[in-house]
Image 1 (cartoon, rainbow, N blue to C red):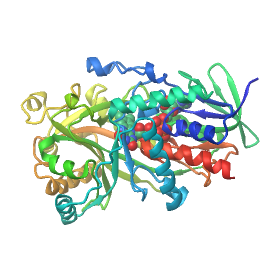
Image 2: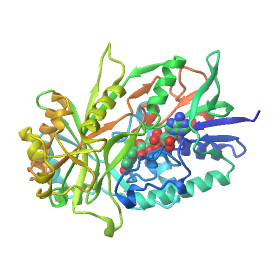
Image 3: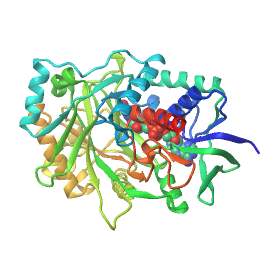
Length: 464
Ligand SMILES: Cc1cc2nc3c(=O)[nH]c(=O)nc-3n(C[C@H](O)[C@H](O)[C@H](O)COP(=O)(O)OP(=O)(O)OC[C@H]3O[C@@H](n4cnc5c(N)ncnc54)[C@H](O)[C@@H]3O)c2cc1C
């Protein structure tokens, strides 16, 4: 029986940076990474060429080396206050967070990331946007963005895979972990369909893709969790001239609206100037809206897209926010024949279905070509609909025309990071030697904090 020092479940950014930093501290460690998706070079999404999803199992967009990161837009959020991309600062404190942010960012630069950080300049234009945001009660979060772009992100993670392999990390691809091996409350290893693997420490960095499996593992093994937040919303797409001024100033604006009627928190997320709306697949057949943009001028579109996400925290006795989010997504898929729904904002406001005919004559044409024209009011709960409407109207003050009839809304976009596992300061679960990191643990929500989480885990371990 071969035994490892560490087993890392999931080769997304949090898993990758865990291995990277562990090896930096101790070169001879025996590390096994087990990933249910493919190696980076085999991650080919057929939809990129034929514009139609063929339901790869597992999905090449969300699984494989670099996790949800490889095909992602590759926007690294640089925010030393920890306001963007997760709650890692709650575990590290401000000083350590700032230090690990700089360290991790430098690794990305060393592996080829662009030196430029967008969105931090202050000038007359940016002050005007701040003023306008304040006037309509939107909170503007100032954060820098290092934009890798989809192509560059792929290149950087390819180099990271090669680096880890050269350093002796064993990586098993196309191998989902099915069970944890736990004896007397101590983690000993993991099981896959065909084998058992043992290690001193098990790190689970399974991302949003692994949320429902991890959720199941938690209840089966009595791993302590707490009720988390679920983010449900839509992706909005408009002509890029509408957002142009804001885009020029802040690159990727992060705005928060506490809604008038319900005082719910709605935030803008993953803002893609001249980008395209994409579909992501969860649980093999659940189609969700997402978006990205290319750095290459030739691949840019005339539209801008961004997500509007409503954060909902449930209280007792409700304990399954992920299931709630999935249920809404399933409803949207049911109406659209398993595709993402699209509706014009004009129809959304008037409470009527968008027909293909009305969509064809719309000013703004969808960049997600196989989205199905439909009616999101048959999917979203009233409270979420109103939260979104009030936020679009507030954003219209900042970007006149945003609430125009031709703006498109795609549904639904759901973030399944709500499975919050109870963790110690060094990310250990209630089972000894079993650690949980990244989006799947409910700590992070973006590439930078997920990567930092891996670094922080390896460092804390060393200092203990
Ligand atoms: C389309 C898209 C665009 C995005 N754009 C951005 C962006 O521009 N900027 C940003 O900051 N963030 C972005 N994100 C989010 C970002 O990609 C994630 O926050 C980040 O990848 C989380 O890292 P992670 O390591 O926690 O999990 P993941 O990257 O999700 O990796 C988890 C890995 O675990 C594997 N896994 C799951 N279960 C198992 C199992 N049972 N056995 C073995 N392996 C398993 C999965 O296959 C996956 O590869 C985007 C996400 C998507 C989907």
